[in-house]
Image (tube, helix red, strand yellow):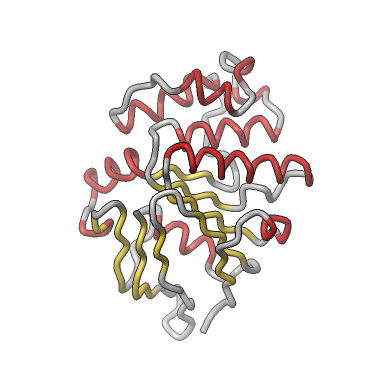
Length: 210
């Protein structure tokens, strides 16, 4: 479902990141853990079609991601990749439901799963609430719901527990794992949060620059 091989990337040519190969089947999970500056978010952005590697290939469900460009890449990302950013990328003036419908609109998929998703994530009662009225934990759940709204084949989460207490951090990881299993999606979590290590057995530790 997700394969990344022979990836190379650097911001300064004499400081390339050490990037391991990744092979995940449908429903498999991977934790990429490391300190700030180790390249975790860089890898996530490459896997998500947001940052083209200098060398190497990323294949999602049989499609070579960076053989696509422009609108084709955007459309493929919208249909197949759900990204949960460290700071929720949801539009504050809109309601929870409107944010999810917007994700459906850009990918061209139906919005039939919205009600069920909100119920599973425990925020059904917030459906018509404006995002700027939500707590941090609720906003994180909306961000997860938006990433899952299109039944993605790959779910990428960037520091999803960074601003949460222990109980909520554990709940968010549990939710991500449950939803990935439900959609038979490959799940990749990148984090510096050591609390997540106990929840996902398949792990890569980033050591920084080579």
